[in-house]
Image: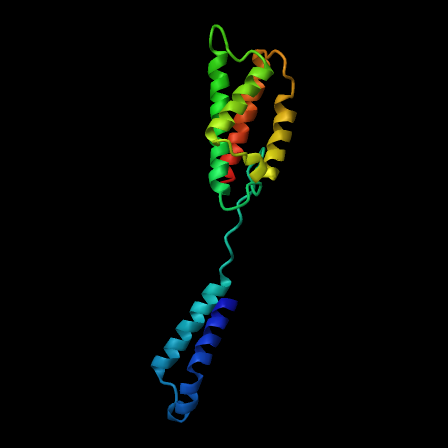
Length: 174
């Protein structure tokens, strides 16, 4: 509503010199002018009566909305989503092998570090996005654990689920 009023006032202020010079030429309004005013009033009423679109609810579960900030935020969130999804896939694939390579938390952490270095080309997304780093770290610690020792299938499943949840949250934060 305020936008319409401001636009009308801007139009009148721009046309004011012309209006002042020609106001004595104005005649009584005819039916065409009355129809135009009625249509303009209906448009203003219609615009003013529209309610704004409801804001979508925040995603359920782990949420990274607003944690990636800056000009590269969307790209960085997509990269984190892809990296976490790939780590979950790699761990799941390794679980299905007769002789798994990732048998300890330390081995999985090494894979995570190398993946980050390769995909991020040495750049630290944690330094660029400390809010996301802290939230992801706290989530992984709480849901997957911090042990660096041997990993059984139950522990691996926790890591897979946690990394998939982080990937989903990072994707929705884009």
